Length: 535
Image (tube, rainbow, N blue to C red; front, side, top):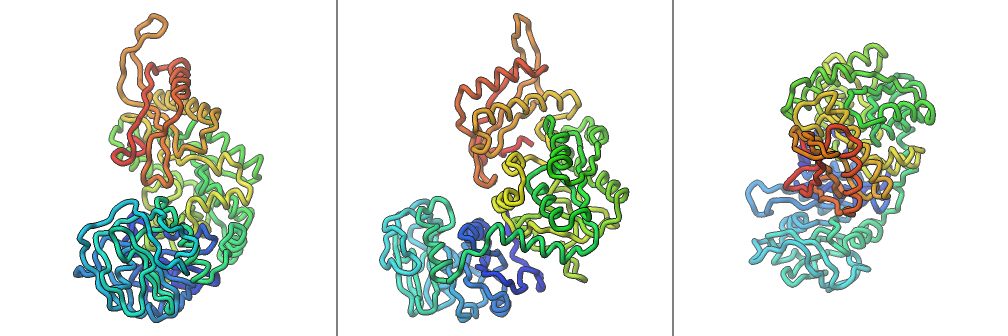
């Protein structure tokens, strides 16, 4: 994800927060979001904001601590991003990570130069001063390095806390001003002592308390929704995923029958999913859902289309059209509920804020398809209770408010559904083949107790046929590709090392039970160079 560094002057994130907060000033690091997640794991709220944020704006925000992220630049390069130098005088504890540490050194009078030898990957950290930042961090512990510059002269008042064999200033501090820097990345999983360091900064240096809890969030979200919506009506496009389902539960608890959920069945869902979803919400959750069967029109919209991007475009367009018709039929509505998550907010940098009102307005239905803009005459105000949360936090909220595990733990599923797991033209026949094969994959993964250990497990249908022999008869049928991957966040992935016996069982069942298939293959490509999905 590319994190935007431009920020509207009146960004909502700069309004003073009542909760204890650690802010991360982003300098273009791929790990800025990860830093925020690690802080939240300590049950302290965190936000990623632009490095352009002024000291005065930070003073208004009143965070308990500030973290300067890493970044791809060198601090001495022309045009390299620099923060407001007044932040060093706010009296707020600051931790600089990698580029953030180098920037701290550079702006406070030290010297940063190109290293004689860069340092990348795992490195042993040798501790010179085990107090404050490095309390309970073991001497010789592994930390993750990724830098080509080094600090060769520290500003006045700073001292070295730790070093590696290659880097003499691997951790530094000015204890009186509570300014700290680390050359490594404590936020990544490869840094064994990273979480202990982060906890030291959050609890001991910033004096935070663990108040960012699931229960506190639910209470706050319900209160905010009620205050915002009042007696107005809210429309939600329900997809059945954990985000939209959690959102439906939360909104229903907050506003009851002022919420209208619409589930558009585009015909590309997995076997039995639409029926199961509607039944769950109606009978078990007692939340009404307007079911719209649009499968025929969606299939007609992509008839003969083989290009994957054109498929996505047409499906997205058809979804918007169907949604527009449904909203006008069921409306009017003042608000559109979206399952926007915090990574989406970071990425968009609030570019869909109405300059007149300061409210976010809907420009895409991101929770469902990630494609297409809403018609101009359908510009709702947005209600986005989940926009402060990461994916793992949404799952915690879902559990807390009573979502069943089959939804909470639901594996990621693309908005266009099975249409992008059929390579080439999508037909009713091919959809049926893939649904049957996909069901077998899910059944056997569940029976082996592996569903929650695998990021995604699914089948792909290829547009080719090959010769086979079944019952002494020659066959000419489709191959099914099995795609089972492990991942932490979907950004990278590896193929799952599942037992051969399981692969054999899945293969035998598919070939014997799914008409039109005579061959099963296993995709052992990681991401990168491949992708998780095939289209």
